[in-house]
Amino acid sequence: MTDTARRPAARPFLKWAGGKGRLLPQYAPLFPREIGDYHEPFLGSGAVFFSLCPRIEGRAYLSDRIDDLVRTFEAVRADAEGVIRHLGRHTYQREHYYRVRAQNPARFSPAGRAARFIFLNRTGFNGLYRVNKSGRFNVPFGRYTNPKICDVDGLRLASAALARAQIGRRGFQDIPEWTEAGDFVYLDPPYQPLSKTSNFTAYTAGGFGEDAQRGLAAVCRALDGAGVRFMLSNSDTPLIRKLYKGFDIKQVLAARAINSSTAGRGKIPELVVRNYR
Image: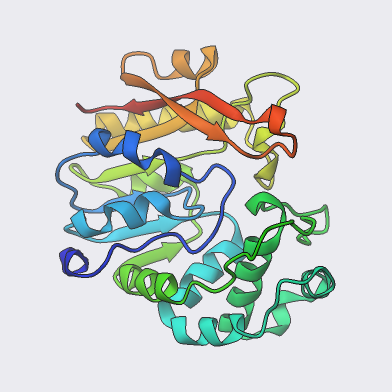
């Protein structure tokens, strides 16, 4: 992917709860100097992938369990111009938002479906992704001042960055099967709640409980044993510190913007775990 170094840097085309765009300045010195094959199984907005793309010498393997998110990345990679055309038909209006939200995404072409997802993401409340028990997207309309629904240049740059990436729906449990010694894996799972009443991880479909956190830690230890480098982000909690004891653990400060009240926002310490220095 070194050819991307000659282009302007790609950037996320989605807003995403828990996205890492604002943390990249703190993350930059923590990434490996050289990256061969790159793996990211909790893709989200892809902020870390887009940031590292010019340095990836091999292939990128991107994955997420949210089907509409994966379909959107696939469509942007294959037909950015089609996605742009469909996005041009959307307007930032409350009535239009709820009309689009009520539509069945299966009725659309891949580009139209991706445009619908991007529109709802860019104009819904705080970039949340949430579905009801029937699997229907149910995030309310967001209040913004002139939101940018279609980032034409951003979509084209993202399409170019994704051209050599493999995009899929694999779970984190599969990582050891498709990595080799020397590969780099970045993991951004749903965070361990800071308290029993914490709802920050509510944006994740299906939940990600303590058993999943323990399973992920076991996967990371397997990667370490196989010579695969990994970097993981998570909450600064006693459980996470215990699960990753023995690895390099650093603390960073992250802004929180999920809460609708300004009192619920601010800087919160998070952890970055690595098996390399």
